[in-house]
Image (cartoon, rainbow, N blue to C red; front, side):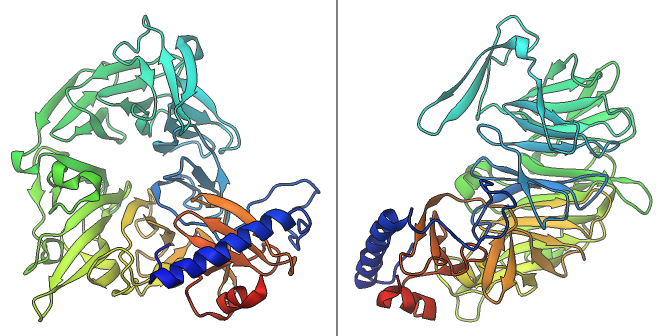
Length: 506
């Protein structure tokens, strides 16, 4: 937590230490609560406000836009079948790096981690289908983070890949839309594919790391790297490739699909300086579009995208609806607009095009201040129906992290940031929280999308229904109804609850 001065810091530490000691002594005596969610004695349920950390790769089912997956930066993966009202977890060591739904079978889900995992029952259970268990020599956890690694046998068809770990995961999974037995994914510069649902795997080694895989009902598989586009013919697996325009290299964050109106394909990509991009740095970014399946590309010159009259913005991610690709969303990290006093207003958020990248409009616009973390001199986007994060961090610079769009409806999308997972059903006119729900005014409960670390659950020895959870990044959250709902408290704020705590209420 960031405190205003040393005296406030000491006050927080004083009461925090006392709270910890009392919690430790009285915890067992106060273990009863008013939680009504558990149906059987002994059940474990999640409690807390939800959210609190970054989430990534929001990925929708082809069969039902109410079903989608996201992963977080703490290794968890989260699956919902009810549009985000509730989530279950599907976790793998080192975390999930890719998701894919079968376009023709709603129950088949694929997850890339240290291998490729498949569910045939809608995510209730999963099994690893790559690598084959007979090709794994050993598996082990190592170092203080519990990183996980598979060591593969030397004489296997995976030659060139000896280990699968957090630095060498399965990514870019794609199930063929006309043949569910054909599955594609990448590991580094290797394209792996099966034509018999994972019984046998083959691979093609390309020149560079694979960034994106796309295919439609045609016989061509498109594989993108930062400087080339490969066209691989299904069946005989021969390929041709051509370089991307020099001024477009290195390219990243590719997206592809067909327009709903005429079924014509459109490809999108971003370009900036990869060195400046490292560690989330500001790197002026250009947007590129192809309307002929990558044979030619043109740079977008829309005045909103280029920030006409200001600095070239930094964009980090884009996504389109695979079968409604005129709709495309773009994440802006740094969008500076000159002010009259020679300073700059720093904006961030998301822009959207409904005409395949010709024109663009803001659908999420926050900031307007200095763009400094923990400095509340900006505003949160006005069209967010948020949960607890707006009150806690609104006005600060909050970086957006990722975006995903429903395959058949470009009006349905998920955008994530440092703390939140937000969903739109109307093309970005409004965004609603799916990480947390407001139960009563100012009190929230998790949807199951809990992202950050909790250091402990603390019990009030004088009020059995008063609990507190201490979180990484999120500080203290308190409950006054035995854990049903939660409110975030900053101990230096002069709120009634804070006064209650500091003036003897614990």
